[in-house]
Length: 126
Image 1: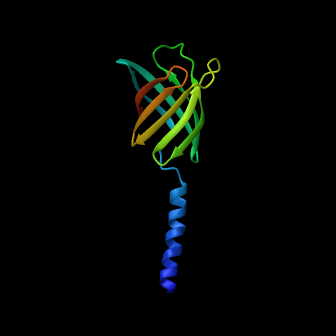
Image 2 (image 1 turned 60 degrees about the horizontal axis):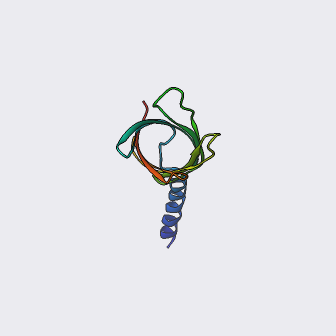
Image 3 (image 1 turned 45 degrees about the vertical axis):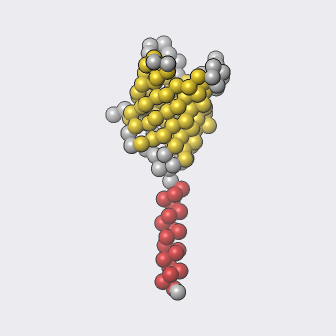
């Protein structure tokens, strides 16, 4: 009986911290391509992770005059992320969800005001 109880306690002591820690290596700079109606663009995202939340910026790499968009309400759940984004002029009309698989981040970008959905595949910048 004592060994069974000890085994259960050890399991919960080890499993608790593992499940509470974020499972992602999201922190850092990610770059890649966006795709919408056959058009290809370039996107850069910079993530700053704290526990299971994050902040950051994203910007188009199409031209140097592109203003970065601020990420708000960034959440991590396992290998899935979500956040809202926008710039100061437009507010926050974009909702982004994503799935991280190693050094590849697949994003779905929903542009609320326009009813558009853009996909993006980003890779960790080395």
